[in-house]
Length: 399
Length: 215
Image (cartoon, rainbow over all chains, first blue to last red; front, top):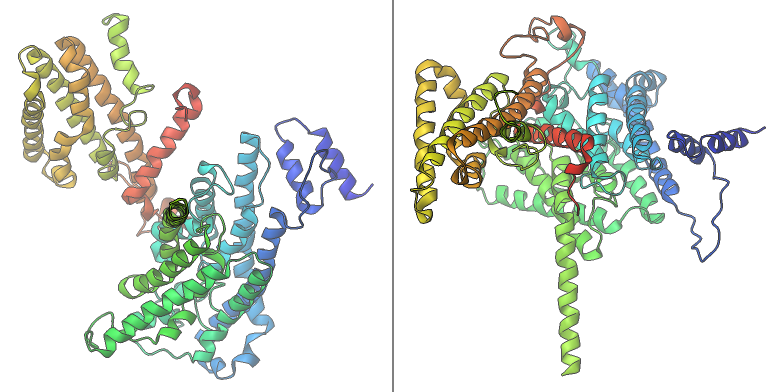
């Protein structure tokens, strides 16, 4: 008997019992279910929730693999800076990948294991089917944390994020806040020493601090915030050969992922584009402030304000946030006009927080969470505006 | 309880669970969020509110027939203010450090919705003994939640309870800290208090479905 048939039999056996959702989920996850729709009209469409989620995961896999290599590369390059002279020769090596395997894969496994366990428990208690929503969240979480994040912290944060960020609102599709960013925000506020500063971004920098082997784990944003020069070229920044959270560094691969998401119509190009526009506008405003000599080099904001606007788009988590976080269909604005406003404000506020937050020069996740809260309000006014416009037109005609 | 009739006993028991001022009536939230980062502050706050509410209810109840209803809010405020100042001065005299932690929130007991709420809803229409019981019941219901929230926030946020290092020393790396445990800084911030209160409300309503509002 095939595995599929076995799973189907198991499912039939547990039908109507408390554990039914768990077996249903395993079956549905691996195969197309045997059931077909009966009677009445029904719509045939290829894109169900499972396929949508899998498309996003596929677009994330290059980013994940790059992140695994980069975890090792940043570690070795911090020890031996001469590696940076020929990046391509020293990047795709087994040594780099090995660091990625021992540091990044456990993050992925813990994220999925803990998150899906919570989902299963809730599905069994509440008697509904296990939803696919966590498949993407579980992939996003390891990509937005520093490589050395302790696994138990991640587990605590995932439990918090899935329960408080999603399940209390009623599960997938009902959440107000993006669960992956809720997890990130929890980590940031609960364990700031592991989530910010100049050590956490490169593997082993924390353990080596204070010894003769000490290495720097400073990000580009961190250096700018302290008015320091950075050693990375624009090419490095765009390709992603820079320290940072696991998956956020490579703007190129993120843009390729964005192209894939837009092509498959999973991600909203309006949100992605308007986020970049918003960030560019804020960057230009800051550049203008510096050009007008309102802010001088003595100011603590000078370093980041003086950063050229297009450079802001490549460094930090802006690209990752714009493509994979802001486009989450559940928490974003639903109307097309609303999406423009929503995305623009995310980019705008991201750069603002980035410049004005001296303790943690990055604000993308805070900006997206803030706009998540305002997304329904934006939609409300867009819809009301439309209603008003049409009422006006109707009155003119009747009169 | 032999001392109290069934009706009187309900005055004490109801606010503890099914009519809890914080989790059911959602009153007095500000102080529940602000001062519960330490268990000690929570306990002192609970006792202070018990003093003010128990005594205040009795005073208002005694005066209920002579207060003109138009100025009753002013009269109530004066009674609360007097009692709060007594608490404040006692704290300053005998527990100066603690009164600094509680800072403005002792003074803000005046604006605690629970107190004015009980004056209005109960003391103005009932005798002093029953008003006293109602005041004690409500302030215990308030205090219980404060202490639960304070317990979890101090334990998980600072790793201490009433100042004792129950989980080990974070700097010396003893106890739990030796195996990599770290304090959860989020617990010390007010939003987490809101989430802890929310979780208590969640558990309470799961246990007693009749508390869930229709909507």
